[in-house]
Length: 176
Image (cartoon, rainbow, N blue to C red; front, side):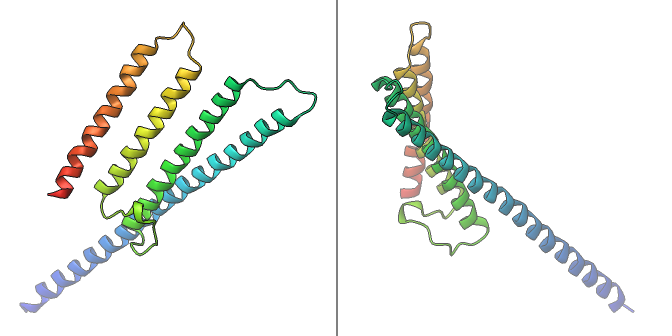
């Protein structure tokens, strides 16, 4: 008779184990949907960049249209770079999450070796620094006297300094 409670406990343990496995698989599926969403957003952004590029080329080559100024071309180019960088961030996060949670054997470029969430954070922080620099450059190109560029520069500089410190401290911990 003492084996009946042990059998019941074993059955309950197997049921709980099955439930945990089912939940983990469900979370992985939801994460996969999120990863797919990031990739779709990146592709849409890159497609939008292609359309914007063609519009600029058409404006420059159109015989009867007003020629865009060099400032307009510079600003348009900086905005395109900003969008491509944003698409890159989305791709990096998607590929990193995929390699961490779905399939670790997925071939990634050597510079994008992701072994942990900390690695993904470092990659993201590095790209965010570049995106902030591009956004600030865009603001400088379109700067008007009505905006306070000093405050914006200090704010962007503080975020870049904080992220750089984060990267430096994480790099020291990884080296030790």
